[in-house]
Length: 403
Image (tube, rainbow, N blue to C red; front, side, top):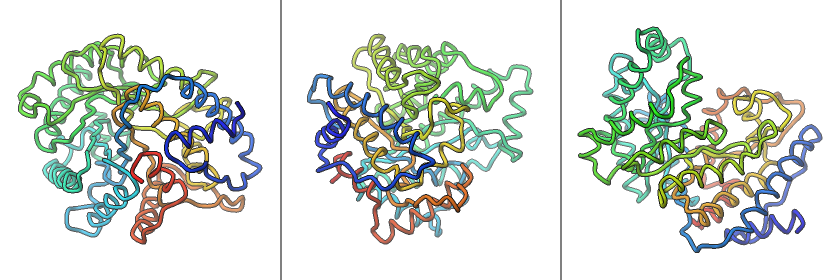
């Protein structure tokens, strides 16, 4: 089957009338575009060959980046930033979303590092706004990246303590219980990207250590009081040690395993095949255990490029409008896979591009990433307030089943 017909089949399976038309690809990016196109075609063929089980379409919960705990000071309830966030909730729902995902990073709920009462009030109010719209909320618990601010200094103090792992897991347990009891999201990914967290912390926690920590959390009074109202899960990036999702799948009472998926291939390894293998490994340990993908986007990175999943230049390529057909195919691929393999929720992580895109110009330097993300969201918010969607945003509505 030719590449064009595979792409068309994927689009039709997801209710799209036709693939997006591709704008002119700048010469600089043609080799990368061709490489990603070929990788997508191979993954599309693999999914097309899977038996159709008639499963439900995954819940779509795009990332709401401005609600990250890094930026809650910009969106105090009732202020202008808050109104922009709630307007974006409305825009995402109108675009086809059934929920949103946000990230809270340790130590932003630790009173020794920050006024956590204000952070908790913000998220409790946000959760109420999400529920008011009939949507679901996923909270991902992460670690603050290294910085010179109070949060970064607090993380450095943990590393310098006599038993860094015990100190970290103790603070993490206290924050997790606050998320469960005070914010009460529909989904709570209590462990996320362990290897990335280790990179930020300066020390690692093994899969078995995290699994034991999860058992303690699930047995806590906070988890018992939340009952089934808060689904507690844990997971890892597909590029990370597969021991993590396997160990988490063996934790009795865990509601789901969460897999992050960005590169199709990395360093010569087929990460789409790894995604399928991780799903199979989870189900082998715990048949029927739900899987969610709380972070995903097509990674604009060539197999021969360095820096792996931590290449700011690759992420900084995302805004260019000529990527839209590949981005749409990537999302259609995952939602079709989710329907066939029982993925419960998918979070397209860089949802600002449903409302905002820019044309590439060789005379304009690429914006620095991640500093560019908040300005992008401001532009996206302005476009959303005018009822504007990019071609990718319109495709997302068809793919996710919202339109």
